[in-house]
Amino acid sequence: MMSTDIACVVALGASNLTRGFQTVVSSARSAWGSDVEVLAALGHGRSYGAPSRFLFRTLPGIIKSGLWAELERRPPTATRGLVTDVGNDILYGFSVERTLGWVEEVLVRLRRVTDDIVLTDLPLASIYRLSHLKFLAFRSALVPSCRLSLSQVIDRAERVNEGIETLSAAHGTKLVRLDPAWYGFDPIHVRPSLWRPAWQQILGVHPQAKSDRGSMVESVKLYFLRPERRWMFGVEQCTSQSGVALRSGGQVWLY
Image (tube, rainbow, N blue to C red):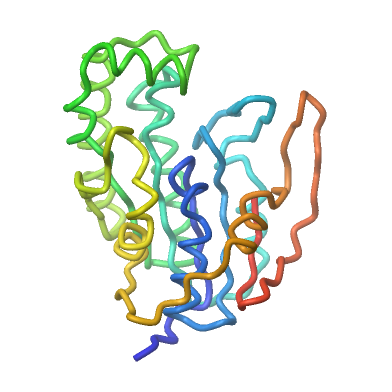
């Protein structure tokens, strides 16, 4: 039976959320109907507190995006918050304390609009399986500026994970532990074949035999949607967000 409890999903994250965003949107639509609204701050390599660059594109930190002003101006509605992909800021060299401080800041802001918040931990099990050479290869490809060793990354990841558990308890969120089976050769990105079950579990919706999987056209459209603010080749681009209506239902705001 379709639940009608949730009218809005606020999703925060980086590469995993970006890659699986259409799955999040279509799963929310299947669970809560074609009027569901999805507000997201995401992007490859997204930081929670600092500007982040991926290839030739730069995005502001999530806490500095226009998402929060949009949430403040909206009337109260049944909302589910997702806080995911916390680990990037470790590789960017930010301290454990600062990384957790940014996570706590978004939890405090989300609590102003909802007490229904999902927080995910880090994929420690797959990080533990990394060899030194494989770590160096992924570090060079994903965050070339990072000079942390594998042991340093593991140490910081463990401490951030402990902090996430503490923050979850303090702010009353639902803590979702990432399933090691979701990861393969790539230790930090969920395998595409498992996007749907993974995001359905994170989102907190029951798998449905006839779930709305959306379309490839929708996937491409969502992937290339312009956020409210970004820099391309150093040139700032601002795009007003009024809610992009999707053909299969639902509206999306991107920050």
